Structures are given as C-alpha cells and as structure tokens.
Image 1 (cartoon, rainbow, N blue to C red):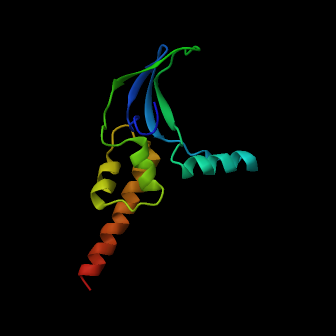
Image 2 (image 1 turned 180 degrees about the vertical axis):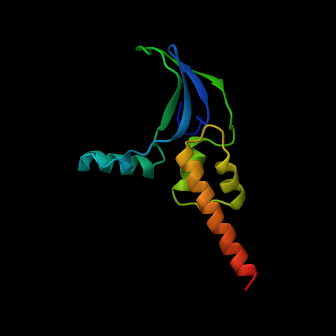
Length: 131
C-alpha cells in the first residue's frame, strides 16, 4: 500500500477493526514537532509520501502481522497522490473542487475548504464576466 494505490474513502479491515482513509497525512502541520521531525515531515510532503489518516468505523484489535484488506473503494479516481498533487500546488479545476465537496469519506474539513475555494472561484468568474 502506498499513496498511489490507496484512495480517499477506502474502507479496510485491519485486525478486527474497520477503518476508512479520510485524508493524506499532514505531519508538517503539527505544532508540537521538534525541528528535525518537522524537516522530515516537510520532506515527506515534498516527495508526496505523506501517508494517510484513517477514521475508525468499527473499533477492534490490531496486532503485529495483521494485514490491511480492502473492503470497498468508494472513489477509485481519487488516490492519495492525486489529492496531494492538488493541495500541493496544482490548481484544482472547478470540476475537481465540486467533486471534493461531496467526496465520500473525505474529512469534513477538506470538504469545507473545497466548498469555500469553489465559491471564491465562482464569484471571481462571475465578476470577470459581468464587468
């Protein structure tokens, strides 16, 4: 499993727990990291190897050697890598922003940010054409 093969919204069984990929990892955003850890986190973001966060759908036990088994892929076109590329500097299209606002499994903070950005894009577009 890596950022190219894992998609936002993926539901996996790990041990007796059921988890869902909710967003890419964002270690460089954590204020309590020491400077060396922050440098590592920034390098991870630069290489697009950020990992990802899971939300717990069903708590359970996870032990050494348990394998993650994909149960359901909700958004096959939204790999963690694609998401990282968009938030890492590539300007999203209006279509991509609209998809993100309703992307199943995506953390609500990211859906909100996409809605806010999309609203700003649409307001700018309207202003431009109605001058």
